[in-house]
Amino acid sequence: MQVVGTQIIAARGGKDGFTVEFVSDDGAVVSVQMRGEEGLNRQNAIMKAQSLMSAMASVDASEGGDMSVHRSARASGDRAELEEQLDQGLEDSFPASDPVSVTRSSVPGEPTKH
Image 1 (cartoon, helix red, strand yellow):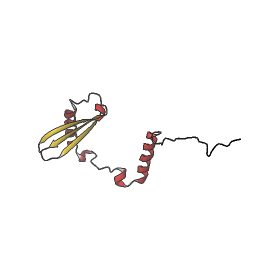
Image 2 (image 1 turned 60 degrees about the vertical axis):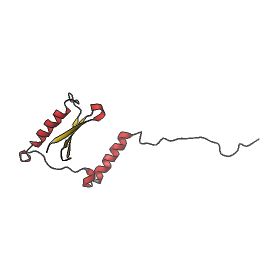
Image 3 (image 1 turned 120 degrees about the vertical axis):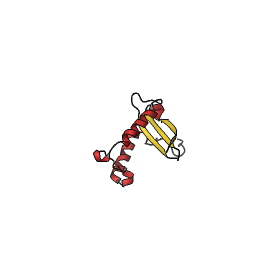
């Protein structure tokens, strides 16, 4: 398998990090997401992603490396966790999540003549 292309995607202009995608000759794509940290930039993102993949590939599960799969709350059907995440999201977006209320005062009917 040969790498035939790479793509660097900056999150918020690189402030939140980079995603480097490696494309193989058979169409497979491997993505490496890296958080924004001091010294990480568009020029060295590919090199850091390659070293991260090498380090991850060399982890031996028998030496205590955690190679287990952690399912998301949605995949595992954990309704309590989903509700907690929803509540947290609503709190984080408050007050933008509340609709704007519009009030208008008016006098019903015709004014009475004295």
